[in-house]
Length: 153
Image (cartoon, rainbow, N blue to C red; front, top):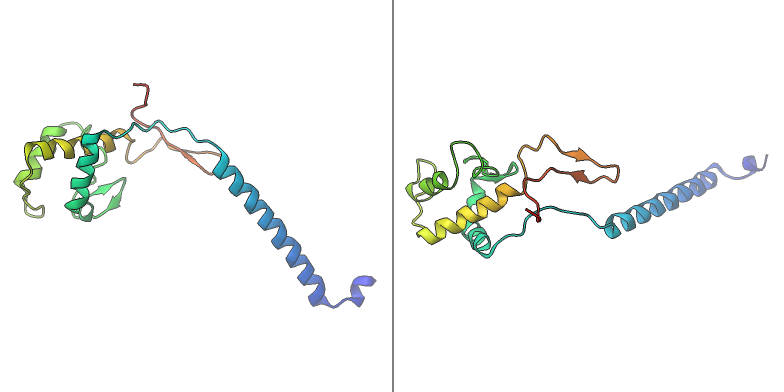
């Protein structure tokens, strides 16, 4: 009978406060777990040559037309796995860099710059598959990806 004496608004307010406190506590616990759990990655480290290739990629705004993992422009093809794609590879990439086509500008890269861009694309190619059909969702919310290379190789 004592709930009947209390206003309905007061009962609901206390319930809402309790629910809010529980949700905040769960959020804080989950945040702690996410940021303190060490994750393992098998992503190979980028070489100096690949870093210079990445800088060339950015300076020439290649992402405006091309994508990695489906993210980027849509005028040119996705280049995530261009190096390992059958009938393509480093020579294929170099051929397009300085020749240009109707929708791709003709760049005047030196041989060293082309090698740097190929090194960058080789690094990106080694980070994984796109589309990655072997991805697995873990119970922690993280996605486990299958990578092409490991640091031990």
